[in-house]
Amino acid sequence: MIIQVCIGSACHLKGSYKVIQTLKGLIEAEGLEDQVILKSSFCLGACSGAVSIQVDENPVEPLHPEEVIRFFENRVKGVTQREIHRV
Amino acid sequence: MGKTETYIDVAIHALNKKGEELCGDQADLFKSEDEVFFVMADGLGSGVKANILATLTVKIAMTMLRHGESLEETIDTIMQTLPVCSVRKVAYSTFCMVHLKNDGRCRLIEYHNPPVFFCSNGRITPYISTYETYGDKEVRISELELGIGDYLTIVSDGAVHAGVGTMLNHGWEWPHIAAFLNRQQPKSAELISKTLIETCNNLYGGLPGDDTSVATLMLVEPKVTRLFSGPPVQREQDHEVAARFVQGSVKRVVCGGTAANLMARELNRELRCEMDYYEPSIPPIAHIKGIDLVTEGVLTLKRVSERLEDYAAGQIISFGKPDAATLLLNLLINDSTHIEFWIGKAINPAHQNPDFPFELSIKQNILDRIIATLRKIGKIVMIQYV
Image (cartoon, rainbow over all chains, first blue to last red; front, side, top):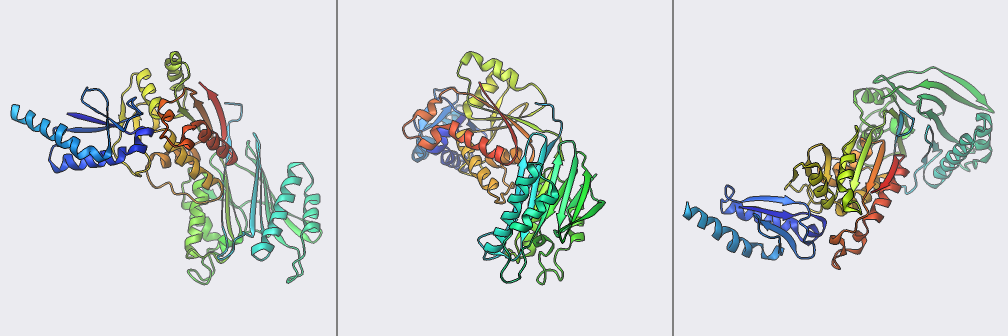
């Protein structure tokens, strides 16, 4: 799974730094470094929402810094574990 | 890029004597396309009185020399004009005047200042002078020839007295400073002046016992930096602008996420963003092959603008951190003589968001301030809108 976080001007002001640091911490804590690649990206072209992120090739979506933990639980942890089970 | 093949790089720094709000040393610079006039003066005493003496000396000398008045006339005017100190009953200020041309020819006029450090081929070198008397003032006059990489460092006596009686018995004497300069491998005038003034400040333990000034004038080869910010108004021009941008031997900078995405797309190169924040308030840099520096736009530029203004006001700024703004500042101050701005006038949708700070929504204003400050510190700036 590749998660891209926008660090363009608008997203930076809305908390890219916090989103990246939180995600980094969670990925490390759960030992998912091999399965989740966290990347930063310049403008993803959706500047009006919260911090723009993109998971794999899915559409760009907004992620509020306060909701990173919930996002991680629902969309990262569960999914990667399911992938492991499949293997 | 014009016909001139050399460039005069100048950096001036000063420390005020502890407890003084005004500096008793003054320096002034006039720079045209092919020559530089520089004057430094150290007024008798310290504080307001010294400041007035030095300011008068510098302003008179600069105005008269620039307009081709004779040395005799200039020195006479200074002596007639300076107010006489009520304590010491003399009107006195030391001075040093430099007239340096782009071809390396230089005339040096010194009066009671610590002798100028002349670095030729990497060594501080003695120079031959004649002494002429104007009224009762004996003035030292020297004709020098500078090559590429040679420089002159002018200091006030605060530098040669640094640490006197505290860290050092006799201060940081002239031969010590010369030896210190011989050990440097200077890349720019700023790096020499900055290292020197910081060392003086350390020798004074952060409490300068005298006003201290350092100025360096260095003859360098032109170093061109080309900075691209903001996409072109016409999307159809993207490709042509990107293709032109990578031509020629210049340092290249792209400021702005959209501009960086555009460059990567049009040049068909990968854009790789870093994740490491060296400074949480500034987005990390990115990489595109063939481009020396890729940064976010308006936040980085805002920081660059602020710190550049501090620098122009004489503050010593650090180039230690590898965040985007510091990297760009270092490139502009220490590694560029000429800077080409390629400014795209397309409207950025990110900046149209009502939550976006108003002052940042007008990137053009920030660029204008950067350009004005770069010109103020003597860089040659060209602008083209794309």
